[in-house]
Image 1 (spheres, rainbow, N blue to C red):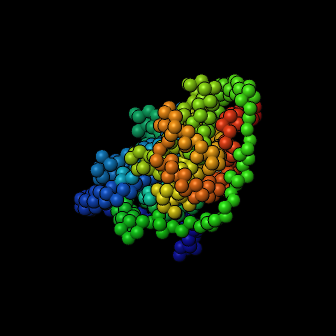
Image 2 (image 1 turned 180 degrees about the vertical axis):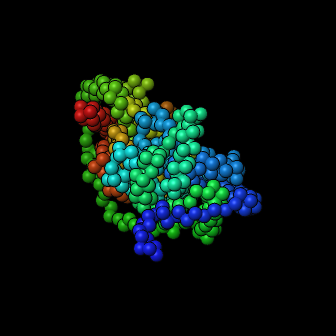
Image 3 (image 1 turned 90 degrees about the horizontal axis):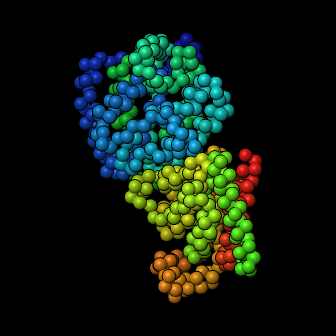
Length: 507
């Protein structure tokens, strides 16, 4: 962003806030009691309204970000605030997609999270030091914008603060910082030292331009004078928090965002009608193939571990389609130290306090390990959609959110395999009755299963839309005919072995 001043000189985005604004300590102290009262009141209102608040603190080195965060922890009720820094990446974090470490620290609804740098820390530092170029920075910035938009649509208030110092003030502060570093070893930097100040601001302006949006705007804070800086932060916070509460009182802001409408297709035929449910396998052949593929999967799981290739396998399908039995045959071939099997049920209170993808991000496996899901994040566009647990605007935008999630997994190198186990309504009825008759299977059948069966056509349409919108080149769906359990199990094992083999051989 550039503007013209009276001398016809171009002014950069950051120069536009170099106004030399100063207030006295006495003036600041005079206003502080009212500021604290307002912030505490707004914190309580946001907590009672179940609204999560995320404050991202970024800017040039030595601008006083740490001092500001310390003051915020003093102003707010610290019991509802968590502060996170991301300069020290752990081995555990390095073995997962970049955004994993941010997801696991997201504030719950009703609480406040403060992030030093957040997801801006690494890309700006990398660009300032020449380790990535503008194309890379633009790609990361657009992904950040999409990520923030998703959180905002879920109801989170995101406040982004950029602390700016003029170059002269920066040089003075950095001299003091160097003196401090003689006494405090290992003090982290953001790559915005004196020698990279200009490069850092060029990268920051580019990134800010691409991530400044109506939902999540940037606020540039002049930081040469600490009293003016802290008062400016207080004004931004009270304004944004008050605005969010006003929107909440009038109407939930998420419902005011109009997503593209997915056409309703009432045609009885779907992609599931093209699945050959007559496919079957003789038991003797099944036994031979089962032994072969289990041996192969055992070998591949250890090879994936050695190659540090993670695997995520998703099972979706009709009730009684055989997901559990198929998973048991698969896991019996894998060393128990290498995998984790997760049966996804209704979310807990803690999980409901976050974005629905939060609980799945937390369970992304470390490099070399495998996670198997009996139902998954697709519940948002299946059971939550059909049963009305998710609003129309929530499940409708979930396709885009899921595709982004899966793209991040695959781009990190995770092998993602998705199965839909398909059976006919007649076969499902036969299995339901069998479960009722056999005492050792009765635990598998519930009233909920019978209720879901009554909505077969609604679920069928939901599956059709799910496959159309989320079967991508990076993460395609594999539709498995499962009227014959033996055939389905072998098809699943065969597919997993083939996909793992392809990845390991090209690694």
